[in-house]
Image 1 (spheres, one colour):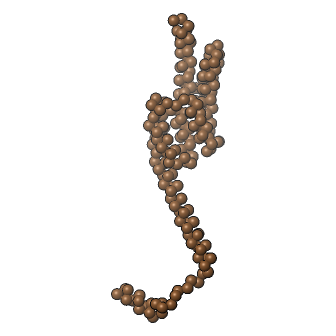
Image 2 (cartoon, rainbow, N blue to C red):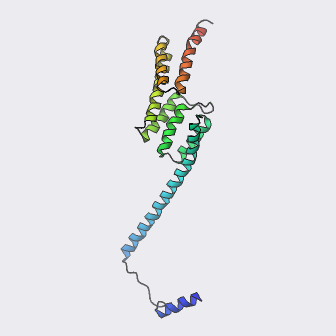
Length: 197
């Protein structure tokens, strides 16, 4: 029924034998086709970026919940790395990146202090004025400086201890400074044990 109506209309208006000409010239059709193609590509890129951001945010939610609970272990670091793998331009992710790497206390994934500093500095590239990241980097630098001073010259252990205590006063939850201070307190016993076998 519908097909017969359409055929009847085509015969009435004489579309059956005539060629349909476009009102637009050929260059306009090409430009319109190119713009439509660009629009499709831009839409594909936006959808792809949005999906990557959403996947990264799913893992970031787990990182945020674990960080609020004070859990800076292997699971938190793995979730953070998965979130970074999906979408790294999230500013909140960069804040938690600095926080997790600074406070990481796990044993399965070994991290030395220089790796931690590199990660905090990498997070600073996204937002150089973030106070949390600068505090974490400053506290970590003080810990490293104190540890290096103590390792190089045993006679300067008092100065290293003061630097570590200042880092703890600045941030009482600084577990790296607390661990370095405990290690520094054990150094005189270890030195005397190795000197007197």
